[in-house]
Image (cartoon, rainbow over all chains, first blue to last red; front, side, top):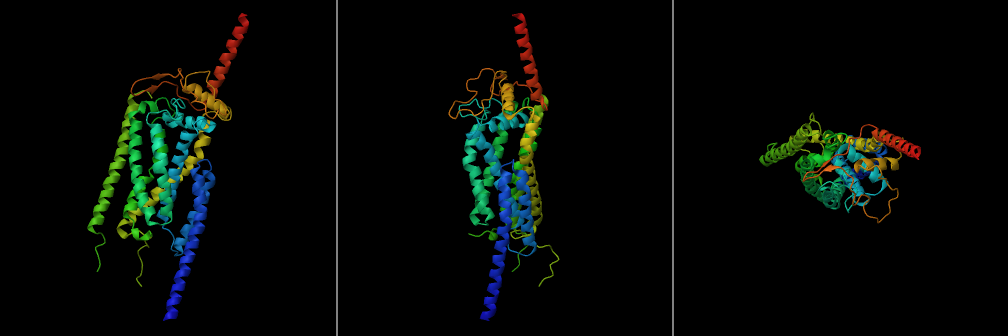
Length: 230
Length: 44
Length: 136
């Protein structure tokens, strides 16, 4: 009886160890892939790495390993990318507005999609985007919600209870900034859209894919919380 | 001790989440619509 | 042991939420892919639209600044001094219709039009110089 019990626990431990290894191996590809994609320009290198990690994860799932559900993986890494991409763009505008890359790339992007990043660029004492409200959004969101989302995503990927909870909080936060940011753009639409290359269409087609919070909220509220540990 | 597959609070939660999705995408569509209308009226 | 004819649900997903989770997963993957593609093509795409390689990065920066402030004399100083004031602080040349909702009046820049704009300006300046030399 004791023998069979200890055998059973050995088999269980073995399975747990194998699962943990499989997850770690997959993450070793996905995390660098996600980080590279977050730098935008190194995305072509990051995306294949990420896909390879995803394939390994899927393989482990099919083999019956106790690894993270695929949707949690996608959600966690997407939130990292979403907040990372936003943070990089806005950090450039907050701290590096007089660098060549900002003055060329950011203003070029602005001239094409959203003149908030072109109109009177680098005229404010604070430098960077001159559109009404834009700098305020940057100062308020970068050190708060984008950092918090990044931390929550990491905890979520580790299947921690606090990660799940804080991802819920920060995704609702995301609802607030989407509502506010779009409202600001609409009120000052003349400034944001007049005489740019792709008015209205450009910004929406470009930025609609940052709606991660809206996709995350239904999942986070309907997932069984038992899969997240303390 | 089997429960119905869909418990009442679960159903209410899913309905609330559905309402939220409709509201938020409705808001985005409205704002997009307003911007498109402005685009058609003003010489951008 | 039950004969599982139903597909196995991922951990955390209960049967009533299976469809919702399946579509959310697809949506998330689409967003991730598109973000990766956007990140990849934004920089090269912008550079090509705004005149690279006919214009170097610094020249592109200067041309954009000229359009932005409607001022042919504006240049981008590369390696902008670290603690200097904002490069356009106090500018007076920008064309805008001011009011509570300002409206800019710079011209739209078409595909590789910055190169044309630069070439036209250089031609004009050369012609003006010729005329100047001629009258002496």
